[in-house]
Image 1 (cartoon, helix red, strand yellow):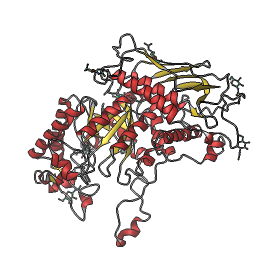
Image 2 (cartoon, helix red, strand yellow):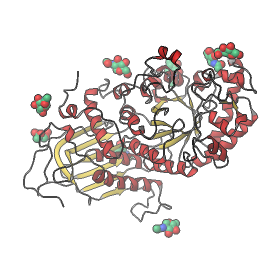
Image 3 (cartoon, protein in one colour):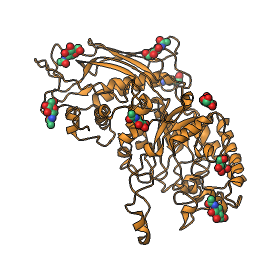
Image 4 (cartoon, protein in one colour):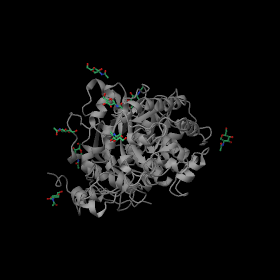
Amino acid sequence: MLALLPILALCVASGQALWPIPLTYTTGNQTLWIDQNVKITYKASASQPSTYGSAPNSSTSTWTDKIITNAIERTYDTLFNKNFYPWKFHPRNTAFEPTQTRASTFIKTITLVQNASDPTDIMKPTTGDVDEGYSLAMTTEGVVTITAASSIGLLHGLTSFTQLFYQCNGGGGVYTPLAPVSITDAPKFGWRGLNIDTSRTFKPMSDMYAMIDALSYNKMNRLHWHVTDSQAWPLEIPSMPDLAGKGAYISSQKYSAADVQGLTEYGALLGVEVVVEIDNPGHTASIAFSRPDLIAAFDIEPNWDTYAAEPPSGTLKLNSPAVGDFLAELFDDLLPRLTSLSSYFHLGGDEVNMNAYNLDDTVRSNLSSVLQPLMQKYMDRNMAQVQSYGLVPLVWEEMLLQWNLTLPAETIIQTWQSDQAVADAVGKGYRALAGNYEFWYLDCGKGQWLDFYPSDAAQYWPFQDYCAPFHNWRLMYSYDPLTGVPDNATHLVLGGEAHIWSEQTDSVNFDQMVWPRTCAAAEVLWSGAKDAGGQNRSQVTASPRLAEMRERLVARGIRAEPVRMPFCSMNGTQCAL
Ligand SMILES: *[C@@H]1O[C@H](CO)[C@@H](O)[C@H](O)[C@H]1NC(C)=O
Ligand SMILES: *[C@@H]1O[C@H](CO)[C@@H](O)[C@H](O)[C@H]1NC(C)=O
Ligand SMILES: *[C@@H]1O[C@H](CO)[C@@H](O)[C@H](O)[C@H]1NC(C)=O
Ligand SMILES: *[C@@H]1O[C@H](CO)[C@@H](O)[C@H](O)[C@H]1NC(C)=O
Ligand SMILES: *[C@@H]1O[C@H](CO)[C@@H](O)[C@H](O)[C@H]1NC(C)=O
Ligand SMILES: *[C@@H]1O[C@H](CO)[C@@H](O)[C@H](O)[C@H]1NC(C)=O
Ligand SMILES: *[C@@H]1O[C@H](CO)[C@@H](O)[C@H](O)[C@H]1NC(C)=O
Ligand SMILES: *[C@@H]1O[C@H](CO)[C@@H](O)[C@H](O)[C@H]1NC(C)=O
């Protein structure tokens, strides 16, 4: 029971709260309390078939009902079990906490209103299908209404709602110091993703689930799963057991078909669509552990760097019927298992090394004039198979901009090398994702993972990696996915992704490497890089909000790094220049 104390303490509103920042919002300075018995009610739109409110039955519930039920359950859990005491955001030795009295106002009703039907692909939306916007109104009398056109919009509204509340230390309880609240919100970009590499190092499923939680807390909506690469093949393909059987680092580091299914389902409930990538024809040396006949230039030593960006070298042969048969079998196993919960499949295509084809017995050349038509044929086969399953293909920018391939018009081009690449891809009429490595590669700045022999070491001192320095959150926050894109083509930029390439990131530092820096990308993608006045967003106002978001993530079980020392958060804008 909460103690009912006779004094009304003044509450110092921090007013930080929301990340990513909504399109428009106002907050006040009245305190409202909330208790665990408050009911959250859902009103489906008249046109929405709903079994919501009847006994939850996962085999008969619609996805809409499952998304809403899950969102409501998580709202209670977040508010009452995963909240935090915000002492860091108030000057030291001040009594900033409100005190519950007989006169305190409690949240009385929380009503979710869905005013339109979910699209039928709500569990695997293509970009633009789902209206993710919402509005939130909280009166000083404790009446809360969240309105949205979709269940995912309501989920985002509830996420914002939970961000308004804090844990009270003295006396307990959960309160907001910010009533009344009015929010109208919608994302700037439809594709707001994180790319996770699980080949260079393995991530246990518990880490993958936690990442989906963290993405959802940031209103991100795509988990791009770069599941395989040259170093290891952790993905089990039931009809081809040797692929992971021989290609995984160790038998305990594999993802089963059920793991993939489980993660995509978990993501679908939280509006995070899982997009699987099988990178090819480069980045495939790990296939040689089970099918050496398919891989050219495998494990060339010591000058592997002539044949690949990283050891071990090795690429799928480019003109081999056996490779075509292999890909057909691989994708016929994998793709039908993805289609119920994803609308996309990523076909890779980055960093293909032309010299490797000098050693490919089906090609024996590194000339563009020889390789380009073969690559077109190779990718045509892949594209046709992906499209035959109704999936929208993605490829890395090189296939379009370096190899000059003709790709299906619906292909999404994932850029990474420059801002110009975004402009070039949309200039050719394709839809594109941003994620310039100089801003949104989270692996950069950790230093080299290669060793240098003593005779060469001096020339590499101080052993920086190719994309150093470390990309701090301010750098990530300064990135605008629309840089250099003409106004008439901005609609073709679907959004972007931050990338956690994992040569030096495993389960031990995964959370810290990704969070809170990826929050910066999340805000750029949800709110846009420019503020309402068209100016670059201010670090000075972002930083206290981000510092608070970090505390929130930690309270919710994500081991995000600190943004700054408590002194800076305690004392306004003193830590500014
Ligand atoms: C709370 O907000 C009202 C309306 O803006 C203002 O008049 C009042 O001074 C504020 N109270 C405190 C304690 O800041
Ligand atoms: C759920 O629905 C299925 C199919 O209609 C039915 O067989 C089952 O008994 C239901 N379970 C519960 C707990 O209502
Ligand atoms: C549904 O609610 C959203 C969020 O408040 C609003 O933007 C939209 O206009 C509403 N749609 C209808 C049909 O009322
Ligand atoms: C192509 O291969 C030849 C060896 O056959 C090599 O001398 C040449 O440097 C290669 N071209 C490129 C662009 O690497
Ligand atoms: C693609 O086109 C550019 C510009 O015409 C050319 O330099 C490049 O060699 C072409 N790439 C291939 C693989 O043919
Ligand atoms: C944008 O305008 C330019 C110049 O008029 C034109 O060449 C280009 O095709 C347009 N792009 C789109 C995507 O409409
Ligand atoms: C805004 O940010 C962009 C980078 O996205 C930078 O090029 C530009 O100089 C900044 N503008 C101002 C006024 O600082
Ligand atoms: C911190 O903030 C308080 C007021 O909140 C102010 O009086 C003080 O000068 C600030 N600076 C330091 C170093 O405490």
